[in-house]
Image (cartoon, rainbow, N blue to C red):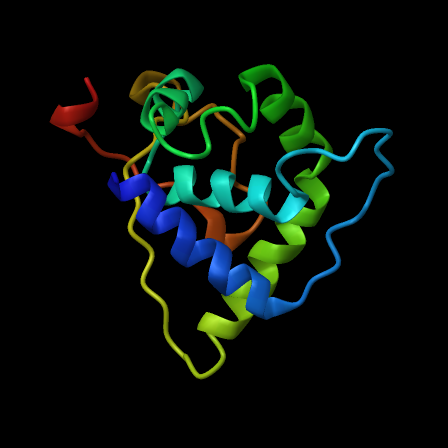
Length: 141
């Protein structure tokens, strides 16, 4: 058993404890995987930084999930469940952050415009708190 399946089972168990109604659209045939299982696959893939679905389905190969869903069906159902997935993310983040007052944000510098155009740029100059910093990042060049 690989790490994906172990993480998937843990996330699925926690999602079932939330008791969220996941039946948001009618399906003619009963699918082999429930909507909650699709959502937990998606959250597990994001948690493990799996961006490519080919890699996700390579990890699933040889496990009990292999024959239960195809890649195209996974994509279609994942797109239909996007709104529900966002609600679940908000619910999870509210339960995790219930007693927290301070949060750290880890970010990387993002180039908005070249330094030569910085004086003429009007991006992020509407509010005082959104002024951009000028600088040079060797890892981004």
